[in-house]
Length: 63
Image 1 (spheres, rainbow, N blue to C red):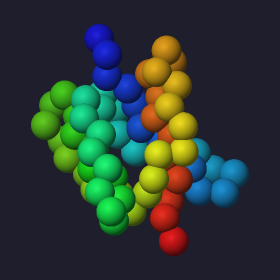
Image 2: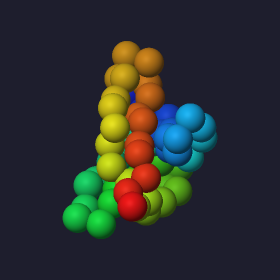
Image 3: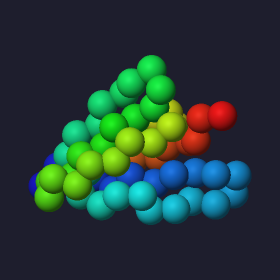
């Protein structure tokens, strides 16, 4: 399995936003996430880092 979990970092807090993310699509206004189950979310955020061996995507909220 190659999917990852997406986390949103706000200050010192890290919150799980979506599990089993299959698709990450950047947009000028943020990030679109789609899970293997078809769940979709759009966040006004940018990719802060990705730890693919650990299956984690860290996002940072845009102002």
